[in-house]
Every structure is written in structure tokens, then in C-alpha cells.
Image (cartoon, rainbow, N blue to C red):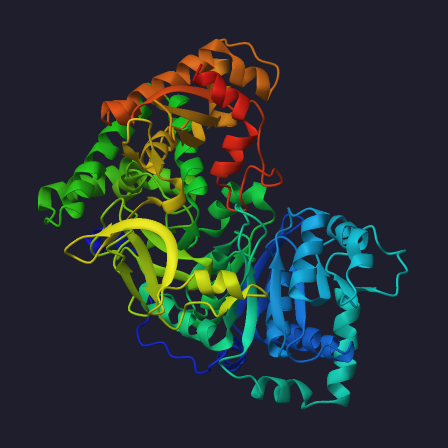
Length: 618
């Protein structure tokens, strides 16, 4: 089957070894090995700009030298407040090379959140992206006695700024060139002094249940997990990756930055989060990692395009995807694909499926990786029917990224795969909780020893808070978060994520929260997909003036009711949703209801919309 799917696609070389016990050591060994080859590309003002390994190495050396010239000492903390871009990676590698600790801050965070994260981490140098992010820093700097300098990446609109605390990235690099010329061995001495057990990065949890907690990861753990990733997701210098998820999130930090440091895969930075669909078609990544929200949007875009196509095109797609689904069914069942079906699949690819993959931008992809939230098994089957395996990964901030991954050779939709060889996983017999142990597990929470102690069992296993099962093949399955399991008034245990994932497979639904703890029946809060529902409204002459009126339109309510009825048919009566309401506000990453990875915060949403929830139970 791999030959059928992977024709004309590169296969990574085996046995890749880049020496180094820390990320800086691996990076600089990579620079020496790959010097003149292009490593980074970034789209700016409509044009792609490239940097070789040598060029990135020179920049990182300048930034690190500039930090040392400013008095940045080993074990000092620097934070980065910016969208995902090349400068983020330069700052991170420079801070680590200079022996410091690097912390990421989401660009959607408010000034008060920036203050908390800088204060808690003891940030002395803050990198900010532009004027917008600088304003947040300036608003709270008087309350940050440890903060000494603010470094601005993009000085547009700030050329006339004269502030002794603020320096441009270009000026910092110039300062670094002078410092390195005067102290040519200083940076190497810093790097040579790094120990594997020393703190390297802070990754703050999303803070859905209180203040964010700073998870501490050591240099040794980062090098260990980065090496462990490559056998799981094999890549080399010929691979193309798209980097667009937040780099302050553990998934993109490890998979989107540190893994390419090790593997040599090219990193392509998108213009901004809104241009991802356009940029992915330009980049055509060979390995593509994203959160379920992105994969759902791609599927929805195809569904909308089909509705606007001719009857012949629709019929061709229906036949082709039907063939793909028959192939996928055999692959998922571990059965061989007959020669006749293989020929039909090749025809289906030529007629429609390859065009669908090109429309999305995944035509060259060997596999797709999804993580950070559960995904509908039906969506995995759909991508598999296109001919691209989708691998579900599972991990946490505290486990330094992936702990388990579904292998391409044996995909089980709804499963998170077996434990990676780099760590152990078990199911606690008393609570059903998944627990993890290994060198990749974090050092603890910064400044919170009590929370750290609570997170481990007496025998040293990390308590993940996820409830799950494991089958005879060692494949784990997440049933839900321990704190999210619903116990109805009738005493029935319900895992809401199962219903939510099925509902999110609808092109008209972006997200949903099922409610029913200690209630007589289940209800749901639903967020509609604006683009697809607007298209439905236009096609069916439904009047609306804005997002709120669209969500309140009776025809849209009926549309979502039909989608809920479709999902209800798959569940037992007690597990069915009886009532729902639609959010009439279009939420973005800036809104408190959404996490940075675009998941609805269950408890916050239920609390914020409690009047609407109570109305459903009257």
C-alpha cells in the first residue's frame, strides 16, 4: 500500500545522527554540517525570503552576542512575545546558546497576562514582534523590576522612538557583532558550560483552571525528545515543513523548531495565521502537522467547493472518494488491497483525489499529524481515502510533546497509538487515568512545588488527567479528561468529547461543548463555521446582516438541528443531545473562551453562558 500512496514522494534517509546533548550543541553541529543549504523561508510582502544554515548561524551568534553585551547572564530568562516567524526561532536559539532560559508568550495575551508571565518567569529581556506587542510591554514594564531591555523585531512605525529600554533587533545584532569581535570565545564558553540537567525553556499551560503554570524543561530532556521524534516521524534535509502554530506551545516548539534543527528539514513560515490555506498550497509540505481545527477547515473548504461544482464533477468525486474509502477500509482492517482495487484507486487519484489534495496543499505529504485535541475518526478516514495517512499524536506540555503516536503501518482511528519508545505509559487501575514516565517528563512547575508534587504518583509517574484505555496491541485511547466526564442526574457516566468530535465533522460546526453534569439530559453549546454557514444562507435565501443574526436565523437553527440529529443517531438515548444553542459571537484567539490552540474552554464557556444553559433546562 505504501507504494500506492507514496509514488513520487521522497523517503527520508535512515540512520540520521547529529551529535549534541543540548539543543544549542545540535544546532551548531547542524550548521557545520549543512552550512550553504537553505534552511528557512519566510513570506514577507508577498515574496519568499530564504536563509541558509550559515546565515541563520551568523544571526544567532549576533543576537546571542548582543544579549551578552547587554549583561544577559547564564540562567537569566528571556521571553518572546510574537507570532510564529523566523525571528522567534533566532531569539530562542540565541538565548539557549547564551546559556539562558527561553519563555514564550502568546501574541494574543493581554497586558495583564504579559505582566504575570514576565514576573513569574523573572524575565530580564523581552523580545516583542512589533508596535502592537511593544505597547503591551510598555504598559506593564513599571511593574517588572527584573525587566532590563525590550527588543523589537519589526520597527515599522517606531523609527522615531527614543526609549533607553527599547532596542531594535537590528541594533542588538550590531551590538553582538562588536561584542563577538572583542570576545570571540565568549559564546562558545557559555555553550560548553551547559549541563543536561539545567533549565532550558519554560512552557506555560493555558491556565483554563487558574493561573498558568510554567512547566520547566531541561536541556537534556529537549535533546532527548528531539532525537526520539525522528524515528517516530522520519525526516531529513529534503523535507519541507510549514511552521505556523504558536511556538510558545510545546507541539510547535518541538516538532516545528527543534525537530528541523535535528533533521535538517526546511522550515517555511507563513505570512500570518489567516494566510495558512494559501501558504500551504504554495509550500506543499512533505510533512504537515496541525491541530484538528485546521484539518476540519480544510475538509469544509472541499465540501463547499463541491457544492459549487458541476454535476459531472460531483459525480466524479463521489465515485473517486468511494473507491478511496474502500481502500481505506481494507487498510484500517489490516487486509491487503486487491490488484483491481489498486487500479481503481490510481484512476480515482487521477480523476479527482489528486486535485482535492492539491486544493488543500497536501499533495506531496507522506503523512499528516494531528494533535493537541481529539479529532473525529471520520475525518481521519476521509484523509486516508484521499491517500494521505493521518497520524494522531498525543502528549502534553509536561511530557515535552508527543508521548504516543499512531504508526503509519497500523492506523486505528480514535486511538492515540502505542507509547513511544522514549517513554512509558500506563492506565491507573483505580481511576483509569493515563500516566507517563520517562526522561522527557518535565522538571516541575516554576515556583509551584505543591502543584509539582500533586502531579506525580508516589512511585514517580506523571498524572496526565486524561482517562483512557489500552487494547491488546498496546494502543491507547483517550475517553476524556477526568474533570470533564459528565455524570447525569440518572447516574450515567458520559464522555462528552465523543459526541463533540462527531458533531465537529460537520462542515457547519466549528466547535461544541456538551453539558449535562448532574442534569436530567444532555445539551450543547455550538459554534458555527461562519464561512460555510454564510454560504448555506446565501444559497437558501436566508436573510442575515452579521454573525449574530446568522446564528439566530431559524433556518440556521434547523440546519444545526439536522446535524445534531445525524450525530444523535449514532449514540444511545441517554447519550443524545436534546437541546442546543448557538454562540452568536464570532470567537477568535483573542477571546477568553478559546485556548491558543483554538479549543473552547469547557468550564469557562459553561460558566459565561450559564443563563442560556439554564434556559435549556427550564
